[in-house]
Image (cartoon, rainbow, N blue to C red):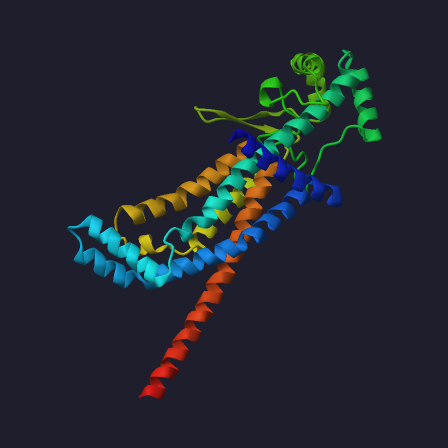
Length: 340
């Protein structure tokens, strides 16, 4: 199972790498990759919506069976199965999009975390090789001037985000503050264990603090917010402005509003099903803020673009099926008029 999951992750990483080779931007590569994945999954979304509509149309018959066999659960399940078979409906079809998109979401989290670790390790290795042996602040700044002017050291930016591999937040700097703030893997062909140990030690030195000062990756004086459970610190050179986490919350909520309830939710009377649905409409946007504010901006970008695509898709499908309903109603009235 682990090898299958690893192979799936490698496949997604390979697709992103191919797109990146064409556009030369990981930010736009993630956007295009997300659109590609959603387009591939769109037929399954349409099939799911059709199944949900059929289930809704079948609700009166389901309710009649539930009333008739209220005291015989086994008979009720049998009759429902027969009804579904007769109407050629798969009651699980509505869950199909989630069964397909959730593995991709988890895989993208792993892939983007891996890419972020690799890119941050590459940046830190470049800095360490240039200034690791220096202690004089002036010499360190001169060495960093040479790295940035030559292009040997650059951050992968995207629109307002300065470093795609750090979080889009004013509470995150463009560089990790210490070794505990970033996962530094031993990457084959990039870092050996000796290099890894050297970088970890370097990030705890005064020299690395000078590196942070050079990039203004230091806190603003007095800009620490104490929230008892944790602290939030605003940096002189913030990596972002919390735009992606906010967009994630807003688009997550709007997507849930545009998504129609399935038949089981429609038949449920005011009770646990409706309460759970309302709770999820609140929980998921809050969860989106948390995951996108604590993850690298590349994964947050995937999350937001996915939500935007889903919103557009749901809006278009709602319009299409509404037009289909009006057409069917008009045909039915015309048929009734002819019979009359």
